[in-house]
Image (cartoon, rainbow, N blue to C red):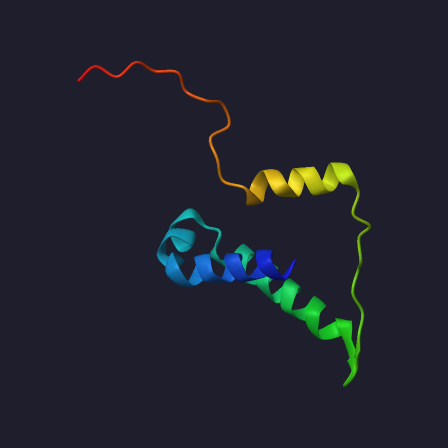
Length: 82
């Protein structure tokens, strides 16, 4: 969730005019505020933070690897004419 909030905020900083032109500027600001409120409320005291932990399964791990490893999905068999 922190990654999503960061990318959304970064996109808003970089492309604020585009968000404004499409009419999504206020919606995006409200969403970023929701993220920040969530993170603030997760910190209930100085040394206490509530988080959600997910159990990793093989299927989830393989899906994760498919995004991490950058390679061609299918080998291309093209003949190059030089």
